[in-house]
Length: 118
Ligand code: 5GP
Ligand code: ZN
Image (cartoon, rainbow, N blue to C red):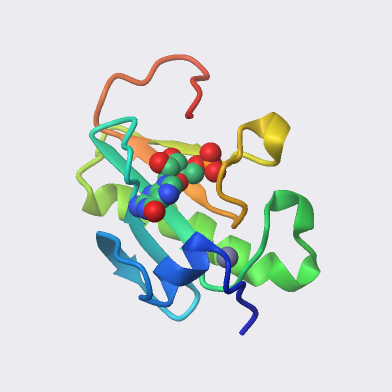
């Protein structure tokens, strides 16, 4: 599997760095954001190292569909019955800080308008 030994999220996915994990399967790990912006703030992270949305190819289609369909299940498990927010920051201009693709799942607070994370 393609990973990057210098990447913090690769290390978390491999269990080499600690995280508060709430879900994992063969394709993704999901853990709590270390600096939460809402009462529920999870990061959905593929096990393979993909830098960002800008690096996706058709090889990632099944993975991305899997991640998208996982989001409402995670939200329900977290008790976010009235809705949730998902955010993907892409590149420096998009406010991306960790250059391993991830989807923020936020909820449980007052989230209004378009909103931003970071
Ligand atoms: P980005 O701006 O790249 O979309 O967001 C990166 C997110 O990763 C930030 O919300 C930040 O708090 C979170 N983060 C950065 N380092 C760690 C870490 O070591 N552990 C966890 N759980 N979250 C992290
Ligand atoms: Zn990585």
